[in-house]
Every structure is written in C-alpha cells, then in structure tokens.
Image: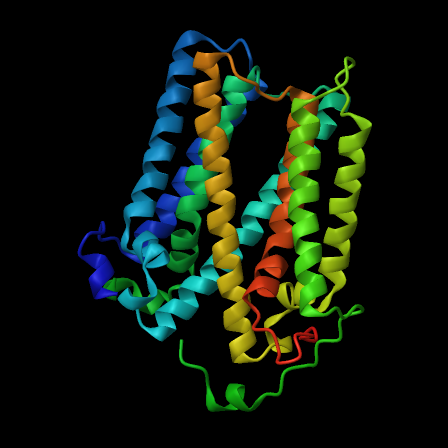
Length: 156
Length: 168
C-alpha cells in the first residue's frame, strides 16, 4: 500500500472506525433532527448545521485516508491480496448503498401515508443526495478499515 | 488474508440457476433493463400527464425493463452476482467483486450527476422531480443498482467459439 500512502492522510484503523461512526452519527443526527423538528430555534439550527459539516468533514477525511486511497487505488498500485480486499469492500459498500436506497424508498412511501417528516423542498432533498454520494465515496475505505484485524492497528 | 490450505481444497457448491440464457440473450436483456428502466422512470418523471401521473407509454416501457431485470436476476449471471462465496471459485469471486466495484462507481457517478443537475436547475429554473416522481426515480435507481452487477458480468464474459455461451 506504500504507493497509495504517499498522498493519503495517515490514520490507524481504530481512528478510521471511530471517525466513520462519528461521521454517520453527526450526519444522521444533523439531518434527522432538522427533518423531525421543522421550526427548530435558530441557535439549535446553527448547531445542527455545524454538526452536519463536521460529519461531512469526517467523511471527506475518511475518503482521503490510507483506507480510502487503497479503495480507490488502481490495480498497478496494490498487490493481488489488496486488490481482492478492495474489490470485496466495494461489494459490501454496494450492498449498504442499495439497502439505504431501498430504506429511503420505503420511508418516503410510508411518510406520505403516515405524515412522517420529509425534506421541505428539492434543495433539502438534493442535500441528502450529496451526503449519500459523499458517504458512498468513503464507504469502501470504511469497510477496509473495519475489516483490518485489530492486531494491525499499530502497523497502519 | 492468505487462505488456509484447507480452504483451497473446498469444492464450491454448484450454482443451479433456475434460468439459463445464451450470452447474446443475456446482453440483449441487459440493454432492455437499462433502456426500459432509464427511459421508463426518468422519462415518466419528466413528461407527466396533467394530473402528475406518468404517461401510459412510459409505464409500459418500465414494465419491459422490470421484467427483463427479473429474467436477468434469476438467470445464471444474476445468480452469480448474488451468490455466496462458498458457491463460487476464486476466479468467479474475483469477477463478481470487480463487477460490484464498477457498479459502485456507476451509482456514485449517476448520483453525483443528479446532484450537479440539482445545483444547475436552481439557476436555469430546470426540471426537478416532485415527491411522487422522486419516489419513482429512487425505486428505478435501486432496481438498476441491483441488476447492474449481473449486467456487467454478462458484458465482461468472453463469448465461446460458437457464440452461445452458457450461463455459469
């Protein structure tokens, strides 16, 4: 992985795992609370925006990490074992993405019947798509970080 | 992770797909999936009847895409794309995982393209889906994403000499 590490943010698998949890929670809470409480006070709204931004920053950092870069590396830059790990990470990432899309479909359909909160306008929906894209980009790297054995933590 | 010698000796469980199609048929079906779902869902979302529902022509095109997707899903290549590791040999696992990698890239690119369009649409007052249409597009996106690994496998498979490749 040396060739991919030259331009990547160095990060231990443990850090990458914690960062992935933080990013998912921050973005989930930031968007979820804004949807659930439409007339949220201004200060709280600003705090949620900061939380979402921090989550997005975490996702970008994960994408730029050694794990994200291994996931995006070309075949010539990594050995066969790493290629297999990368390809398997993409397969897992695909399943998460499809599961999220199907969940979003059912939620949207249900929300129209049960009156659950939905994005206020197309701009807010586009924001959610942006988050989905960023998370999807970071996801293969996150899977790699979670699949790295704990005893390799110090070697990252 | 280096496989243990015992893992290398395990014979994969055979893959018995309920439907076997020639490579040519699978590829034609895959084009029908992409065209049917792409045109049926996107066209149906953009060009609606006055009451906001999709035009009947687009609904029929969607049906063609959906039925083709079902056929591809139960066909050998679709089954290979969704098979458990123990059912495939090392080479097939690699092909499957690479198909997923390309699928991921296509999905992210499509979504990113839509996100860029949402920005442009604000400035040029361009088309954006209403709630009902967004739901249709989302289901079309999810179905295409599930069908794509099998489609990629069909297009990456080398045709046999008689050009009638059996499903794996």
